[in-house]
Image (tube, rainbow, N blue to C red):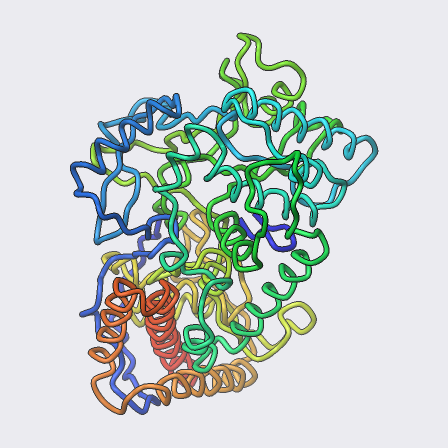
Length: 533
């Protein structure tokens, strides 16, 4: 989801025996594969700590499922200390299967984004009004007028504030579901959020390689602080009971962190080609928001908004606004299998297509250890000056001839090679699943060797400099042990409430970035030598 503040198959390669000697521009020992070998994330949706035993937690989760009136083939479990949703049995082997269905009337939901086209704003009003009425009826609670006005406002900014305040109100006064669900939501310390991180935590990556991180956090906080003043969040209205008399700006930071990290977005409208209402809607769906993110290749579930009669995403909220589905029920937020899922397999979704680690960190406070869609700068404006880029096909051929990519390559290495070539060539479609499957050895690649070599050396120098500047922030030796120690120490600090989850997330971000840079430099070193031959 992106709206102002709201963010919410590999090829089989030929083997060649031409091997190229490797050179090393790095000052220090780089990370080996000793640290975690899985493509893992530390998602904010799973970082809530629990004092209950795992058995008690499982029982309470089952009770929550009943309370929320959901249909479900999922259970709660932990892997590597992270909480997530897992399949209760084998599903989706013959056709897509329902994993989870959450009634829309227990969800917190609002139109987001700026509306376009005639009649859309009016439809927005109706959509928001119907959603609020549906929530009030189901939960037997009246939403404060102040929040209703914001949620049904004409501008996206006001609706965003309304959504954040709705969450704050719901966990205290929103009825059985949300007052129960409060314990499952992460506390402030447990959220790796830009809005909740300390200056020292923001400095970790901002001083080393992601130089805009701290200023980006400051810009978002400034905007929310301005909203806080502008919409008089500190208020007292005798007619509206429920919200604290005085909401602080920190409360709003926390609420926005919840919305940014947990809301899902969907299009609503009568039909895809209808101009009735194609506005995006942000939905906070209890239980479904516990599903963790994975890279696109690993995702096994798709999120939809469907009507209870099996209608698709486009029709359901339209029906909700205009009288419900044909069997009288409202819409639901749904998780559906996209491929066969085994018993006890974690249910994963995509929080957004082709998100780099930089984007994941800002929106959700976690990164992937090996992210196929990660990106490195090559020192020029990607939009305006694409002449200073390398040839993706030539780099790919080099990787195959030098056996940098091959049939048995591990997924992490391949992801990093993918990302390196995408970055150096500015080719977002590199390694598409069907691309170049039938390439033969006679493939003709037309490049200017001299200019390609010069540009390759320039990018290599740039990336080597970036790596060394990161390493300058760490000790001279035992880089691997040092980073691992920092991660473990950050996790202890979190337990002791000496830091937020953002500290550990920052060191994991640094770890993944160092590994990516190291692999990218290795690819480029080999490419330069290959061109020289």
